[in-house]
Image 1: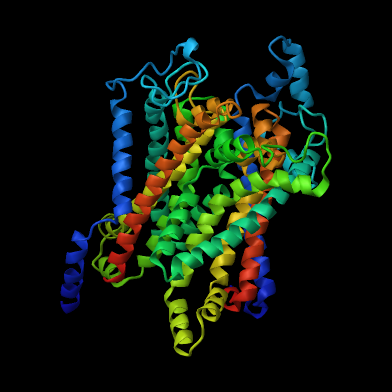
Image 2: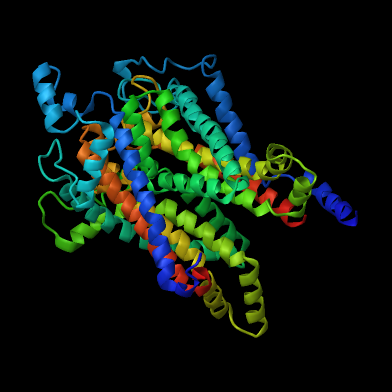
Amino acid sequence: MTATNSFELGTAPRARRRLPWAARVAALAIIAIGAVAVLAPVLPLDDPVRGELSERLSGPSFSHPLGTDGQGRDVLSRLAWGARPSLLAALLPVLFGGSIGACLGLVAGLAGRTVGATIMRFLDIFYAFPAVLLAIAIATTRGAGLTTMVIAITVIVVAPVARIAETEVRAIRNLDFMEAARASGASVWMIGARQVVPCVGPALVVYCTALVGLSLVYAAGLGFIGLGLAPPDPEWGTMVNELRAFTFSHPWLAVIPALVILAVSVAFNVLGDGLRDRLAVGGSDG
Amino acid sequence: MHGVRSLTGLGLYVLRRVAVAVPILLGVSLLVFILLKMVPGGPVDGLLGPLSTEEQRAQLTSRLGFDQPAPVQYAKWLTAVGQGDFGDSITKQTSAAGLVWGAFHNSLLLAAVGGVVALAGGVALGTVWAHSRRVASRGSAAAASVLAVSIPQYSFGVVLIAVLAVKFGVLPSGGMSSATGEGGLADSLRHMVLPALTAAVVPMGIIARTQRAALLDIGVAGLMESLRARGFGQGRVLVHALHNTLPSLLTVAGLQFGYLLSGVVFVEIIFSWPGLGLRVFEAISQRDLPVIQAGVMVSALAFVVMNLVVDVLHAVIDPRVAQ
């Protein structure tokens, strides 16, 4: 009983501990970008697809804060509209791939040696397969589009999440409360749902937060090499590639979408780091 | 371990690691094979074009062996691959293995230079992050490594080209050497700066994180405390601490080098570096199946071998691992 009490005393102040300021700024930035993506249709933006050729490659001005691209389209508007597919292609794969990977990892961690080893060795194949090439190959078999991007990135997210989940489950599988649950006659499913998921879940969610940054980078990478959305629809990676053609005449232009991708990727990584530090502090004083 | 206890030691450990690597490579080969079966249209349509007759298609299909059952095709392909024969490139009419091997050499060069930069930068960054006495240095190191991990290679490459190659014109923006072929070694090195730097950034950030975590590890921290108590200076203490982070450093650096080896696709595309990643990327867009297969198998092999080397070195540094 004493142990339980001190544990609870230890958790009370932790619940009120706030994220580091950097992680809070990152969370705000992500919310802001998400809001822009959701609200793009109602924001006072120019048409992202049709431009005025007479105004092509005009520098920043009042009507075009970030200037226009090679077809006279407003760059700011394309960035705002491009946030929709880019963010979806970053979030959905982590959601799908993370869920599949978590399930595989939980089963591998809880099941017997043979089943667990079989699952993990199977996933090792995906580790040895160069991730970017795998995504490119999958995208090529299906042709450009948002669904293609999501599927290609989902496939490469599964293996790392499964490995983390399996490691976390192995770390707790022989602890006293697990023994107690087994001794009380709970089924494997019951233990999985009541004991394992609450223990392992937070760590996986934190890991997946940081994975969104990577997923964004890979998804935009597919766009960059022409496997994103079909033109003329805006998407950040596609924009980097389109504007790259003007590197020599308008160097700053190609840098804009590149920096946006970088900023959002940093935001997800900083948020993931902040969440992980808080989680790690909580775990060590238990 | 099971029943062959008399054979323990490094030799057995190496054998076991090799035994694990073989099924992984077989799995990769099967995955490549299945993936390429799913390509719509397939190489026959790509080669003959829309104006070909049904008869021509059938002829080419049987010449390439595509009319046989898939398992037979796989077995035949795998047997040939075992002898280093990936068939001829469909677009270039030369051996796919030769094409890929040449490209692998270029990727190896880039990975070696990039790997050294990443290792040196990562260790320095991680050490400052963990043990600098100034809060500002620790903060900058933390920020730099988070930034490094998040940087998309194509973003960084585009920025580098815009600033260093276009604005200031100090470095070339692509290729392996000048078009004139003059300049020798100095020229090659100049061409390598930007791609190697771009390839090194993400691994550097990852190495910095691992290095910091290892330095802050309880055991190492205690060691440093006791060394300081005996009157060692900060430099000597750090040398001893760094020695103790070698195993984790080796693991992460080896893994990162493996990734670099398997072709840094985006870097090679941006800087037109004729390496494995660029070669396979081109082959994918041209539906050149033999080159894709050879490229993926070579990069998977490089990755698996790299892991093997890391495991063995780890066992040499820390003999407990092999027990």
